Image (tube, rainbow, N blue to C red; front, top):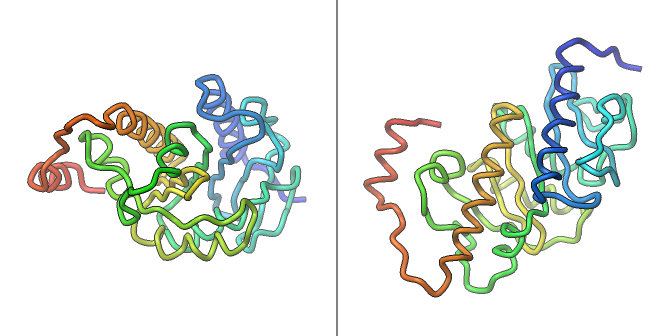
Length: 215
């Protein structure tokens, strides 16, 4: 059994708080979605078949760097996906994966650009997400999905899984959460603007954002 530090206890509580906030806002439902946080001695991951709205901080799974369960309930069946993100992004300290309605709806559309699914509609989307590639469909729990994610997530902090949902990495749990929420709101805007002429940000405006708000 691994020891639990005060910092780890606070992170467990924060994961539960964020999970409930997502659930209360309708961004997750049932047992869908999972959240992880990297520690100095491994990482925390929400348990399999758990509801993010009713997480018990003490039962959140703790895994070592190789994905072996150290304590808590059995982890999400998509643990391999979180591990792939951490291995490809040294600066990532948290990962959020949801089946949020608008993001999933966009992932099901024909004709979207697989290299960059959403246009740069707002400054905050550009600042928090930037580029959003579409990862081809794999069934949930398929280990091949973890390998498929690697080539995308190494270059951008967020990806959209086809017919499934977003995976977002952040420098902290709050950072990953806020970016995930920004992605969902932009997906909602994108769907609302279907069949309307839009005015996305120009390359010059995007460059200006990157200059003033470097990632």
